[in-house]
Each structure stands twice: as structure tokens, then as C-alpha cells.
Image (tube, one colour):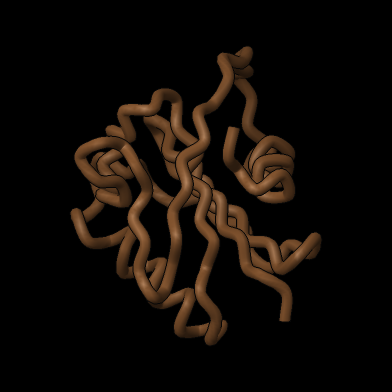
Length: 122
């Protein structure tokens, strides 16, 4: 089995997730905003996915700024991603982009896919 990479993109109104097994998409999800989630929700989700696939996850937290203030509690006080036996979090800072006012289906995952395939670190 290839390495599993999960990209998490917290945004004001929702949180997008994309998981790849090598180049193959194995999961797409749109969850509620991270600001409304339980403090342990993200860590519990990552642990559960790791146990489900019986493999540690490489996680890319795709945020607007290095402060890692997404409410997911996946970073330490210095802004570095957490590392556990189930997952290893890296932080990727999003470049400014144009916003569109239209959503179709689960939205556009091209940017998350690119980050997953690049490994997330800039």
C-alpha cells in the first residue's frame, strides 16, 4: 500500500478533506467549519482514518497563514504540525486566490490534489 496523504483545508464556512493513496483519490469530504468542532474532533478523525487503513497518515494542513489558528488543534504553540503514531501533520500556507461565488457538488478539489501530490511543504 502506498503512503496515505490527507489534505485538510479549513475555511470560514466549511472544511474540505482530500485523501490520496499515491495518486489515487480514496476520500473527498466537506465538513462543517472547524471553529464549531470539538477540540479533539480533528485528532480523533485522523486516528480513526489511520486505524481504518492500518497505516499512518501524512497530513497537510492547508491554511491561510502560518499562525495555524484554524481551531483544529493540530499544531503546537510555535505553529509546527503535531506528530503521533497515527499521523504526521505538515503545514502549507495557502497563496492568495480569487474567490468565486458559485459552488458545484463538493466544490473544487484541484488545489488540494496539487498540494497532496507535492507533499505540502513550501
